[in-house]
Length: 128
Image 1 (cartoon, helix red, strand yellow):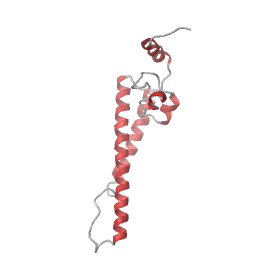
Image 2 (cartoon, helix red, strand yellow):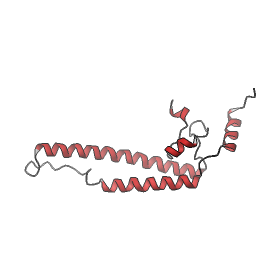
Image 3 (cartoon, rainbow, N blue to C red):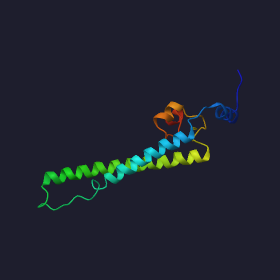
Image 4 (cartoon, one colour):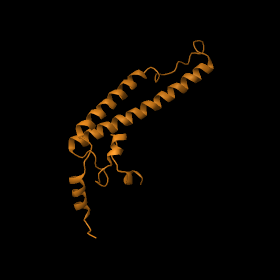
């Protein structure tokens, strides 16, 4: 059995790995980013402060509005995280690092990238 150093294995892995096409990935990431920005704009009103005037809104309606506001704010935080992941993935494309694990340098499975083009870790490193 031939044993390779880690650097040699990474070189061979990068040389023979058929990574997802960077331009296709860039287009998918841009489309997801546009969709997230649109959803963020549409939900802006839902995230606004709830009026505390009891004459305008009943107690249960106000509690319901506060719950909807909290859910909208949580969704916005998740969208913001995804936008950061998209920007990081676009930077990896520019740097020629897209499709490779940011921890170990191994190739990320194409099916994993197809499901989540923002992913930066291989299965092994993501499981740690």
